[in-house]
Length: 400
Ligand SMILES: NC(=O)c1ccc[n+]([C@@H]2O[C@H](COP(=O)([O-])OP(=O)(O)OC[C@H]3O[C@@H](n4cnc5c(N)ncnc54)[C@H](O)[C@@H]3O)[C@@H](O)[C@H]2O)c1
Image 1 (cartoon, protein in one colour):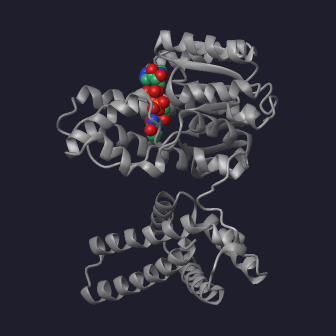
Image 2 (cartoon, helix red, strand yellow):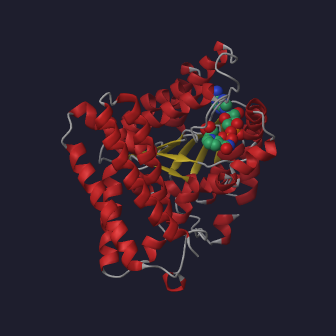
Image 3 (cartoon, rainbow, N blue to C red):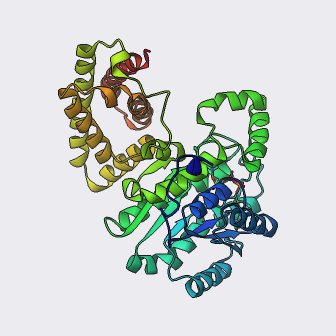
């Protein structure tokens, strides 16, 4: 196990109590394992009795901590959530962490998925996390707590009865974080990446055939995002240890492990000494794109409340972090570069790739709302110029 191999502290979450919905199988099982290893009390809230009790036994046998509890529940049922609350309140001093992991994944085109499956998806993927918030947030407000949501990759067609509620879950996370700023409740989303669990494998079969491609081709197209269930699950547990870093953000399990130093991002980590880089050119390109962003950011602050909220939340959705944090990252890089410290910059390709995608997305938005043809042409030209600068930066960073 990754945590054992790295001699990770077995007491990192000692005496903390974590509720993991759907923790009987797949990623939730691996997350439960990681939490148990770190000494937390783990409550697996699972609809499948066999999976739930097996998970409890397997993990308790593996680490001998006897800290895993299985609670049989259908989280779509409000009364059962009430009973879960009573159970946890009487058995544990307090609930510290909620991992919203359970999901149902109805597959098929929008008009082909029965409305009862849409209803079930709403009930499990969105309504249940709201019910859990309503039950547990008040006590967490007194004692502190961490609530983690589990978004999906926002894939295209044939999964919308699932994806739509998963996207709504991210909005739920964002607004909950906004309503609870800077207090002892930490709220964020961690996307696991693409994990070949039984559910995901079944989903791929439907999506690939609906798209008219083979499952092999589908997996190939997702190659960069495929991660082991263990990596995904451990990412949840480590995110909790370093939770303050993530309040109000959306991150990925893999990234959490890179942030914590448990795994290194070999593909991106480049030793500046080995790289043949035209630093003068890079500095010029970086400065111009950073200035563009600072100007844009200032402009957004001056918009009216609703426009500002739309732009900032759209930015966060596209980039996976708030505009404010992105600006801070740029400023930090700028200071490092001034001191000729290039290492972080040379491993920041992802950041510029995302910004490129964000500007491409802005061009699409522009086309849908800008009615003045001259304005549209000018703004599109400007955005394309920024995209070209970003492409130049990315090209330099790609070079071995
Ligand atoms: N596997 C992936 O590639 C992937 C990608 C992005 C996001 N996710 C998310 O990660 C989470 C785990 O995914 P997974 O692939 O391990 O799925 P999974 O199907 O293996 O696990 C989901 C668990 O939720 C349980 N569950 C379903 N309905 C329930 C209910 N009403 N009450 C209680 N438990 C219920 C299931 O029995 C199951 O054990 C999900 O939220 C999923 O949306 C997965």
